[in-house]
Amino acid sequence: MYQADFLLRSYGYTAGELFKGPGHLALDIDPKLAWALENRDIFPLDLNRAEAS
Image 1 (spheres, rainbow, N blue to C red):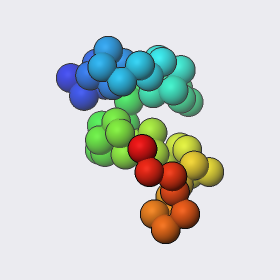
Image 2 (image 1 turned 30 degrees about the vertical axis):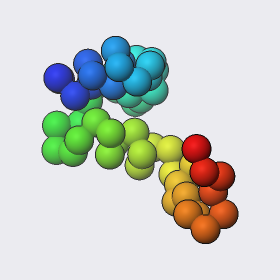
Image 3 (image 1 turned 90 degrees about the vertical axis):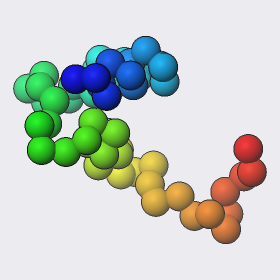
């Protein structure tokens, strides 16, 4: 729960981004990994073509 709170407060995630589906966090994986797996259309990032930030 701490990690989800950190994502909400520090990174500006919304509850809708983290709590997809039945409204519960997955207990067997990290919330950041769960978000990444739900948003696979963004990943993988090609480091050779990505803009430097």
